[in-house]
Image 1 (cartoon, rainbow over the protein chains, first blue to last red):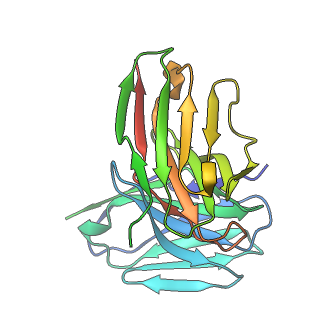
Image 2: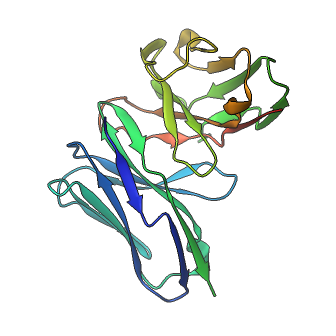
Image 3: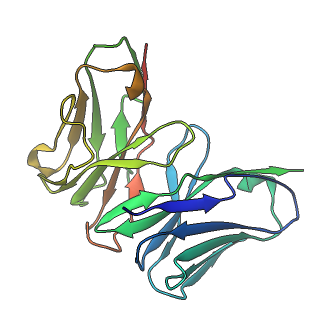
Amino acid sequence: ELKVEQNPLFLSMQEGKNYTIYCNYSTTSDRLYWYRQDPGKSLESLFVLLSNGAVKQEGRLMASLDTKARLSTLHITAAVHDLSATYFCAVDLSQKLVFGQGTRLTINP
Amino acid sequence: EAGVVQSPRYKIIEKKQPVAFWCNPISGHNTLYWYLQNLGQGPELLIRYENEEAVDDSQLPKDRFSAERLKGVDSTLKIQPAELGDSAVYLCASSLRGGSGGELFFGEGSRLTVL
């Protein structure tokens, strides 16, 4: 059974700081997704990582994938309040996505 | 382009009552998913359709849950009878193709409260 674990589960940080969210998974897969969810809203796709060593950046967010270590990271640079949300990683397993528990990120002024 | 549309957005019912949720996927998307999201948790797959065929329903509690996707477009998820533990958000998603690499697009969800 595939297990997807994120850490931390809760993160409170100040604006302007950098931080990283980690996503570990237990079974071989070379495809991983990051989603953002605002309270009461649906999931918004952020990144699709399709191969080992993939790195993608959008604004202050950068995601990477190491399939050998079964690890993906989501790095936040110079955080701003608008990035406050819950972030999920999801691993592709046999044509379905298995999600982590989510990381609730709060960015304080 | 319209996204994935779900209705109703909110539903409050008493236990043992039936409830149904409807989903209209993005036009042209052959693969449709129903996910369950409990409070503070990540979504969990209930069922996946390729066109009108349910290709993965291993996580669907078939004693009380049923789903259909007639004509391979819209889909309905039904719970009968509902239990207190069914309170959650039911998310519908669609993708252009179901194979690995097909990005999922989610609807806003149907939030169910069972009293």
